[in-house]
Length: 159
Image (tube, rainbow, N blue to C red; front, side, top):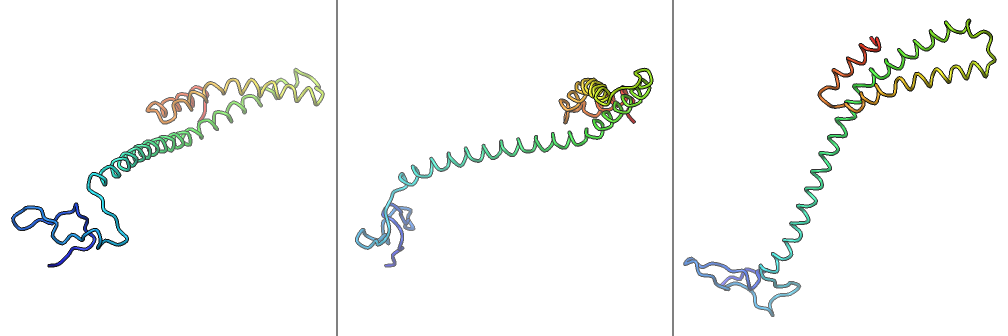
């Protein structure tokens, strides 16, 4: 009679008739460096591990979705960068031209006064830029992103 070494008592071999038997299962004194457990013990160990793996898989899926959303938003913001940069350049061009026109009317300014006028006009420019840029960024990745960018470019005369 052959024995199936490594089998526990609770593991069964089925005879040809389908009835369980412990034939070939080693006795307690024959087991060395091993342990015996029944399938209920195994199930208790597997269930918590399975639940933990399911939680980890759900977390990984959520994390992957979040990363995809961030990547899409970064891409959308990169698409908007040329519009934002062109808008800033256009307004800076207007600011510079208008300052140059008014330099004669302002007369001779001290260097610190000239710096103050520059700072004042740049501050105004930044206030004007703030809302359109915020709107563009808020709609980054949205279906209306391109229409909004075209509208801003048209309104401010950006090529």
